[in-house]
Amino acid sequence: MAADLWKSLLQTAKEKIIQQRRASLYDCAHGYQEELIKKKLQQFPGGSINLSKEGNGIGILTLNNPRLMNAFTGTMMLELQERVTELETWKEGKGLIVCGVGNTFCSGSDLNAVKAMSNSEDGMNMCMFMQNTLTRLMRLPLISVALVQGKALGGGAELTTTCDFRLMTPGSEIRFVHKQMGLVPGWGGATRLVQIVGHGAALQLLSGAVKVDPEGALRLGLSEKTLVSSDETGSLEEARAWLSLYTEGPASVIQAVKKVVTAGKELPLEAALRTEKDVFGSVWGGPANLQALVRRPKHK
Ligand SMILES: CC[C@H](C(=O)O)C(=O)SCCNC(=O)CCNC(=O)[C@H](O)C(C)(C)COP(=O)(O)OP(=O)(O)OC[C@H]1O[C@@H](n2cnc3c(N)ncnc32)[C@H](O)[C@@H]1OP(=O)(O)O
Image (cartoon, rainbow, N blue to C red; front, top):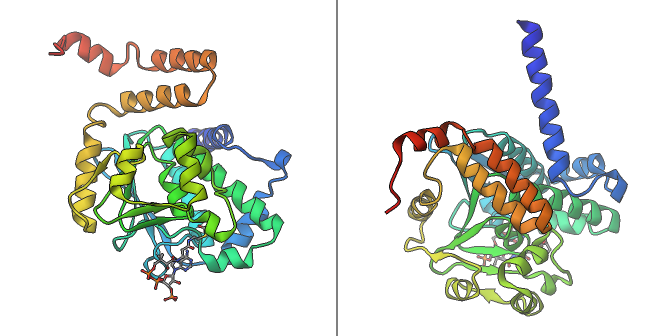
C-alpha cells in the first residue's frame, strides 16, 4: 500500500518534470541559470499570485499587489511559476481568467527590482525565467482570458498576450511602455503581439508606446469584447459568463480542443497534423464520445 502510494507520487513528480521540460524554452544549454535567478528573485518580496479553482472548471489567477498597482515583484514571479505548474496538472480544468485586484490589471515589473537587477546576467536570466513561465501559461490546455481592468503596462501588457482572449472594462488600457524605458518586451510579448494583431499594428504599438483603449483594442483584434461593468466583482462575473460559452462540456474535450488549436498555431503543418491525430485518439471512443453516440444529438 505504502509502496504503491510512493510509486504513484514518484510517477506524478516525474510526469510534472517532463511536462515542464516540454513546455519550457530555455535550460542550461542556453546559458540559463534557473537556481541563480530564483535566489535573486527571492530578494524582492511582496504581493502574491492567488489561484482559486472553481467547481465548474474555471480557474481564477489573481495578481495581488495593490500597493504597487499589481506590479510583479520577484516573489510574485516565483509564485506565478508555481501556480502554472499547479494548473498544468489540473485534470478538471477547462478555463482560466487572469486578473488583478483593486480595479487594475498590472503595471509591469516592480521597478525597484528592475533597477537592482539592471546588469546583463540578471536581465537575461529574468527574461528566460519569465519566457519559460509565460510560454507554459500560454500552452495550458485551458481556454484563457485576461480580464483587463485599469492599466496593463509593460510586463502587464505582455501578460495579457499569453491568454487566448482579452476582455476589457470601460476606461481600461493596454500599453507596451517598453520603448519609454529604453527597452523592448522580453517576456515574449512582442512575438505574441505580432501573432495577435499582425506585424504592422505590433510595430506601431511598440514603437509609439501607444495607449490602446477598449475601442482601439477591439478594432485591432487585441480584445474580444468591452465589458459593461468596470468594478471588480461585476466584470469578473461578466468574464465568467463570456468564458462559459466556450467551456460547456467535459474537461477532457475542452482540453483536447485547446491542444489541437495550440498545435495548429505553433507547429509546422505535418507536426500539427500528427498532434491532432494523437489528441483525436485521446477522445475517440471516450466517455463523452460514447454518450453522444447514444444520445444522437441533432445540431440544429
Ligand atoms: C519595461 C520592462 C519591464 C518588463 O516588461 O518587464 C516593465 O514592465 S517595467 C515597468 C513598466 N511600468 C511602469 O513603468 C509603470 C510606472 N508607473 C506608472 O506609470 C504609474 O504609477 C501608474 C500609471 C501605473 C499608476 O499611476 P497612478 O497615478 O494611478 O498611481 P501612482 O503612480 O501613485 O502609483 C501608486 C504606487 O504604485 C507604484 N508603482 C506603480 N507601478 C509600479 C511599478 N511598475 N513598479 C514599482 N512601483 C510601481 C508607484 O510608484 C506608487 O507608489 P508610491 O510609493 O506611492 O510612489
